[in-house]
Length: 281
Image 1 (cartoon, rainbow, N blue to C red):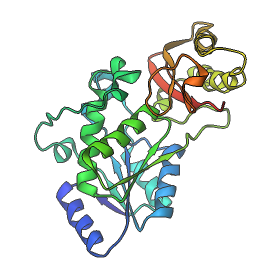
Image 2 (image 1 turned 90 degrees about the horizontal axis):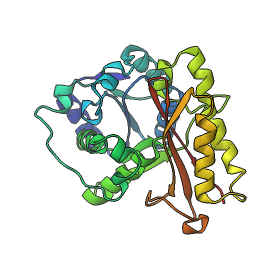
Image 3 (image 1 turned 90 degrees about the vertical axis):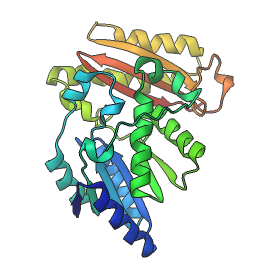
């Protein structure tokens, strides 16, 4: 596996791959890789001739400077894992390589970016669009792989590809969970042992809510999930929305769409955790 730090070097390699007719798979990450990321890389390796994995903590998608400062960074371990998974290139650029000049582009993904994470994290999805579009332009992949844990992000990236006519297939990959059901996340490493035990209540509650679908209205189930997670005081739900899985707009009845998704954000201490459940009606 080759570690590439400079954008210009990667562009030369990509040009060579294109000349050879090789299919390129891209897995954008912010590092601190875990088995969730590994599942994306494995799928990319199985479906492409060349796999590029970016490891870059993107500053433009953080609206909280402390969150950016504390985000886990484990580049050496990340590269070792990527090599073992069969990735061909680990792209580990500096901020200056991705943004040689300030990125002032403003994106509009209405209505997808006006709900849930949108109001809670102003500018977040604009920063995601900035970095992902830069990576798309540099790596020119045939396919790009994203986890469904960031459900809203995945929907917005699909919309960006549609808006800008990128010739890229976006591949959504299922959430990978620990044995107890906790969704894998780089932020889990920031939890204390006690917090980690408490945090599993998020996924357990979402899983249990599936069995209550037929006996509760959308509003009743929404409130039940919030109350169940908040009880005890160790966890604090920031929001729990049950939305149309395509438009991301809140639904008021189970008949409003065929693919309802419950999206949640919860604070466990100072750590902000997200998860979701794709309800089966």
